[in-house]
Image (tube, rainbow, N blue to C red):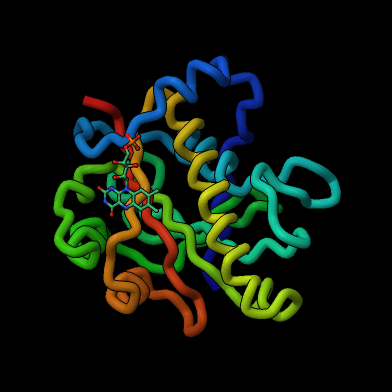
Length: 200
Ligand SMILES: Cc1cc2nc3c(=O)[nH]c(=O)nc-3n(C[C@H](O)[C@H](O)[C@H](O)COP(=O)(O)O)c2cc1C
């Protein structure tokens, strides 16, 4: 059983006007080599799927509050976290390592050779556990899951602007290859990958 790594508490006062964040959000594909901090990565993960109420509701809406998305963090360059793949636990605002080693190049390769992706210090990956939603809503639930990935991804994009970081949504990849590189369990499907780093 992997140990739980608690993240620094999210900062609810990061000072960035919403309209400025909307105005400045832009896909960024070139990054400085600098490391990111655990605090910055924790803030992005909280924006993605963090818990915001005692009922365990989250920063992004979810059909039926069933929360079919899983959020993974791929670490390449962060002083306080070893390279590897981590699973985000929204309730505990914590990480659990699921795979050791720097897999950024392998993920870029699996993303139809978008080699620039490996320049991001980290990557946030949204995956789907479809049955959580389709068991209640049937086939239509798949649509809901994809909409939820859009909500969560936009949260990350706007939080990145607030932290003066760059990111982009990547969805052009070989599903099976990405699942293999991440070490996903059977039935968990990758939806999108968001490399993140300091803007050049
Ligand atoms: C669902 C989706 C998939 C995308 N996949 C990729 C991708 O695989 N590679 C990439 O470089 N950009 C990808 N993008 C980013 C778009 O190219 C980008 O949003 C678009 O060019 C508009 O630019 P902007 O985001 O700066 O406004 C994707 C965006 C979305 C919403």
